[in-house]
Image 1 (tube, each protein chain N blue to C red):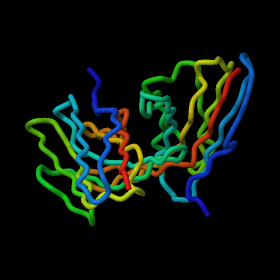
Image 2: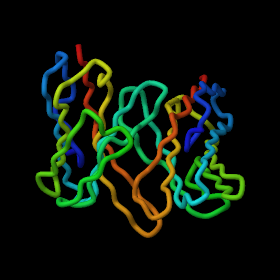
Image 3: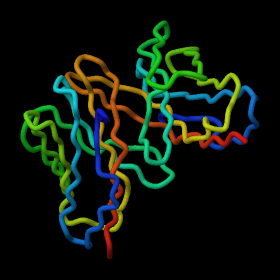
Image 4: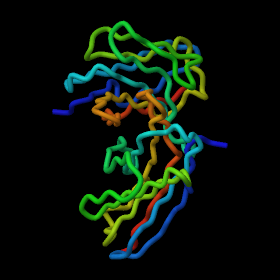
Length: 111
Length: 114
C-alpha cells in the first residue's frame, strides 16, 4: 500500500463546475497536509495547506481534512480551463520535515 | 529572479558518465531536497539536507550522492549514470513554520541517459 494514494485520473469536469480531488494516507501520525499544483513540464507549486480537521477555504479552493478516515480532499469551485493540471497531495509525517507525495491526479477542465 | 534555480535545465548523457546537477537558492532556507519525478510515480525523495552539516538519504538514494557546499547550494551527482535514471529532477527548499513544511521547487532538470 502506498503511503499517499490518489486516483491518477484524468478527472474531467466542465468549466464552471466543482472539481473534487481526493487523497488518502496510511500513516495515522501524519500531521500536515498539502496540495500542490503542477502544470505539464513545470515545477509543483503550493496551493493549499491544512493541519486541522475540517475545511479551509482560500478563494475558489477548499481543502478538507478528516484524520479519523485518513483522507484529505481539495475542492475547486467555478473550475476554469486554466485549472487543468496535475494536483499532488503531500503529507508531512510526525515531526519530520519530509513530505511524502502522492502520484497526482490529472484534472481537465473542458471549456 | 527565481528563488530556486537549477542548472542545467536539460541534459543528455551516456551510460557510465558522471554528471552533476546544481541547485541554488536565495530564499535563505536551511532545508534543501532533491526529488526525481517519473510518470505515474510522483515525486520521490533522493536526498535531503537540514543544514550544511546534515545530509540524509531519502527513499531512493542508491546511485546518487550529494554535496551541500553552502546554505544556498545543494548539488546532486550521478556517479555512473544508467538509463533508468532518466527522469525529471527537482530541487526544493523548505520553510517550516509551526506545524507545516512548505516546500518551494526549482524549475527542474530534465535528464536523459542513453
